[in-house]
Length: 387
Image (tube, rainbow, N blue to C red; front, top):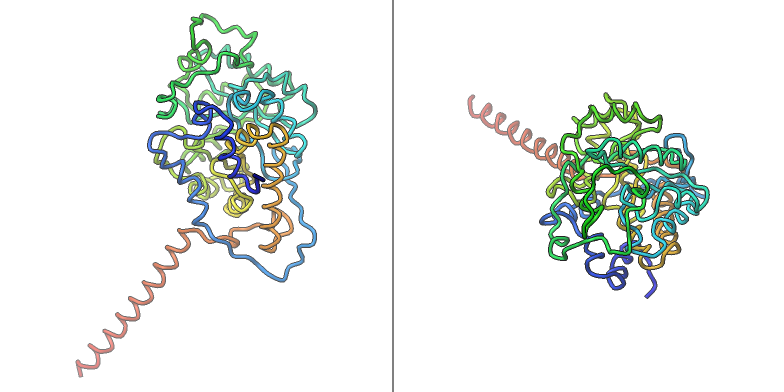
């Protein structure tokens, strides 16, 4: 069967991957309400296209933290790509480079910084968890710097792991043939080696005390720009700005952490308004169509990161699958721009979309006008009969 849209990669991957692996990639926390809402929220946003505009030339290029890329679609961090395909993150890196966009390497990748860097030129960010052992964190940051990674993406929504029932039922473990390559050769201090090895080490190293002061600490050990990933509220957006972050990623961890938080596209505008243009705001979670990308840009995002589609397309067809998936999103975004009357990303504005909040305000205003008219006529009648 020919794959004609990004969502079809998920069904194809389900047929190829072991159940434990597919469920790890595909499922979310608890009732998975947010997992579904990440997609459904996009479907409630409608377009307001403009017509009779020359769209014979469309420019999708943009700049992210000083790096020019071909489109506002980047690769989010996701763990353990070699569970999806033997070439793992190396194949993903090559696909991102071929597409002219940014790849974000996970702390828990199954290819190392150096291996990914050796695949060729490309702009790469490193996603970082701040662990209890700050010496390990500092070692990871230094390795990222030496491998020419251009920014740190700090995940801040994981003081404890989310509860994912599928992983519990499947008794998920890292396949014995794979390891977290970025920890190879590091001084990990005292670590008990058992059947779960470094996976259990990570669980034990999650730092519940992580706070804003740790961003200040990171800034003392690196000059790399820091993007904070996991912001959903205006309060935290303002604190992120106060603490000197380079950018904010509106994220709910792909609905893998706290269930019943809003879809990221629902939370986006609140964060954008709080930031007031001081740093770029990006979005991940739920992107499956070029129309989704357009809607995020219209609501103020500077770009988006895609997660699950990367590992699903990688599972189906390796590097070629990731390339095709990215090309699909690019083509759909370009088509949406043409049909909306936009020739560049800067022409995509808030006026191009209608959200549920807009419709609620319009309905409220309409009902208010009806009520005022009724009250006016009631006063006229009362006034008439008073004579």
